[in-house]
Length: 109
Image (cartoon, rainbow, N blue to C red; front, side):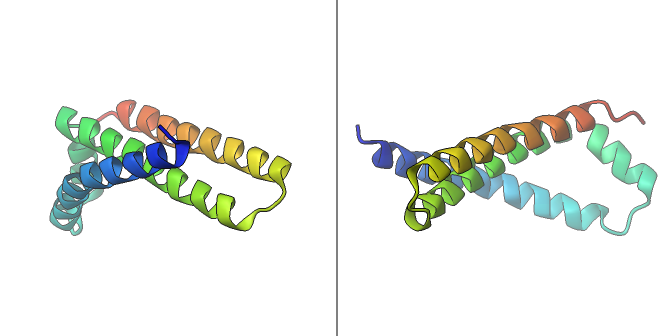
C-alpha cells in the first residue's frame, strides 16, 4: 500500500475515533465549567476520565501530526528540512501527550 494511502486511512480512522471523544470532553467540560478547583480535580482523578482524556490526547496529537506533516509535504521543498521537520513533529506529538498523561495520572485528590 502506498504511504499516502496509509496516511489517508489513519486520518479517517483517527477522526472517527475523535468524534465521540470530543463529544464526551465537551459535555464534561460544560458540566465542570462553573465548578471549583477541587471538583475539577475529582473529575480528572476518576479512572474513566483519566483513560478517556488519555485517549483523547493520543488521538488528537496523532491526528494533528498527520495533518501537519501533509502541510510539510506540500509547502517545504527542501527534502532534508522536510525530514527534520517531520521527525521533530512526530517526537513532539508523542512527547506532549505522554507528559500530559503522566501528569494526569499523578494527580491526587
